[in-house]
Length: 116
Image (cartoon, rainbow, N blue to C red; front, side, top):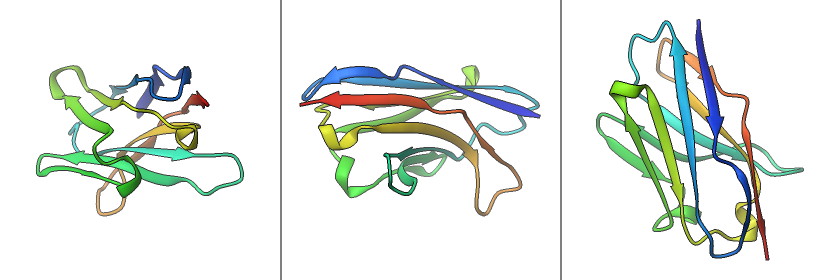
């Protein structure tokens, strides 16, 4: 079993920055294919960024502002969020694996609130 724990969320003013962390523990075979998702109230969960050994990808709305990275030695992924906007307010979730992989694990989420 694998556990993912996110941290780093909080309340920040527009234009500010936060760095989210996702620590994986348990029976981890490959710390690859990490994704950050978010879900705002009344909206569907959306993919924000992914990172694999092949590179990283971002949803258009965060390109140039967010940066995803991971430290395989620490089984930890990060999401650096700069120039935050009120529309970035959501619960942010970390995912390991997913579609196309033999494993799929989610964290419990961390709240990010951006005030205007």
